[in-house]
Image 1: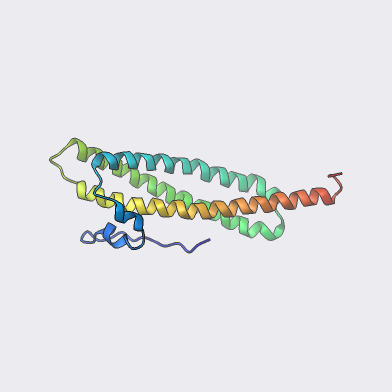
Image 2: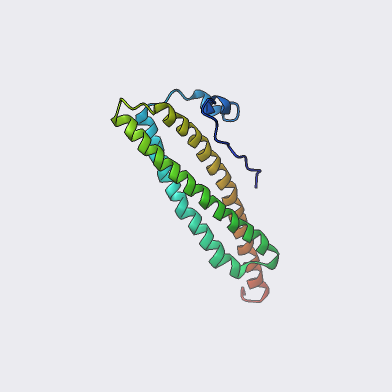
Amino acid sequence: MSKRTIVQRPSEKMDFRKNQIELYPVLQTKREISLAEMKINTEKWQSEINFYYDEINFYRKLMDNYFMWFIDEKYIEDTRKLISDLTKFEKKRFSLSQRLGRLVKQVTIAGENKYISNIPDCQQEYAELEILIFEFKKEFRCVKNEIFARSENVRLSHKARYLLNGYGR
């Protein structure tokens, strides 16, 4: 798995988006986003993050209930590490879900009440979440690839044992 980078919460004076442009070129093309677009994108991210909850639980159950019965001894430690990684991703997913929920509320309040201007705060939080969600998806894809590779190894080793014991004739 790739080395994970931690994005630190910037100080109030720091412009998070400008400092991340060299790391994430896609941000260069983004214009200032409207509250309506921000709300739509944030709700879309919430939906994706909620789906990851189901996906993480599925992979955890797959590994706990299926892999452990068929896996060779040499792969058990790697499988435990993958299960541990899934637990860490669930914690990250929960944290992102909480932040997204707060942002939706902030954006809704900013849209309804023109006199309270928390739009710069919303844009700052939006920019941070955009990057964190991108990183989450990228890292989770790597873990899923490891799970798929491990499941293929389990399937092949189980099939080989089945054939070697004479059941495949």
